[in-house]
Image (cartoon, rainbow, N blue to C red; front, side, top):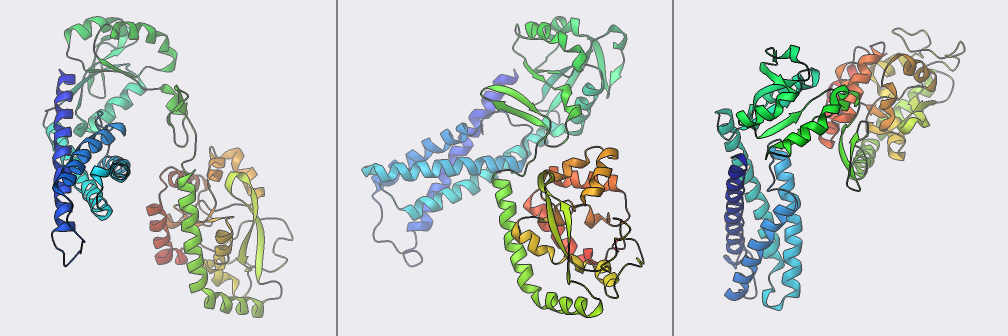
Length: 466
């Protein structure tokens, strides 16, 4: 039943996409050739050429949507995922249409018109699909367009699955029950869903109940049941999905990948690779250059003050650990006496007696960190990221704080998610690690801008900075 409904929805989505692509073509034609005074043109394209190009667009666009997977079931996708998919498909379709109109003499057409059409097609189809998704989600919350699921398992993993199903009712999944491994759980409930039998009862349950999807959420020690489960399900038309128990061991960016057709569960990785790393580096170079130029008068004044108030160098260099655990020399304005660590490395403290006359003020306002803009410009650091620590302290933290070393999967930063939440100075290292790992896993340029804005607005006056 569900598959027939899915085919109906797919046909409806294709029809809607075609309508909006056609409307975008008509709007682009009107804007490009409808007002010669606003947008001059030598002559109107022939009607035959316009019809050919429009038909090509109506063929290429849905094929591109299908190629990027926009006609597959996408209940879990967010509106942003939908818009990004439409963007990718539109870029591919637009390039194909330009190529075809260039090589086919009967379809030569205005490049400005095609660019305008592609832009309008992206905007209109994106809005249509987001609206369509919102309508479907509203219907699912009211009990329509549901997909009935049977959960195999009655333990921790099954509970997590059912809690997520209950949390996201807009996705339209409704549990019909759970099947446990042992008989003693039958009659109990898991997250509000009744355990209606054991895994051995699967054939009878599938025959008696309406089930669209079987979710296997068994603990790893019970996976020997999987061959029998697949044998039973192969005699039906239900979908079968596996929730891997190994995700309990995942740290950063756990997920499923494919290697030469072989599925691989990724338990630990970093998201700042490829285009993400390039975008972050460009972000750092641009903003560090701007800050260095704008703050150059202040840097000169601070140089004079540091030199005039205590003997010794203006800048203080200290070995810190950054990306991939590699050491680098971090720059700061010197705020301590030159013999400050005669008795060995130690953390700064409130009213530190080792501070120079101006050093205490520089540390409280965090202005002593400004020379690190040069570290950012050179690529040793980033504007935003986990704050770097000294090797001597890292060895200590690694032994007693789980996952501490994961902070080094990205470049160290001048400021970070932990710092704008007040985790500086003599505060919990454990808590800082939690905030740093949250930043790494949820990184985006928008998050970097948000952290920078809060740092500029409030970060220079942290009560924990000394």
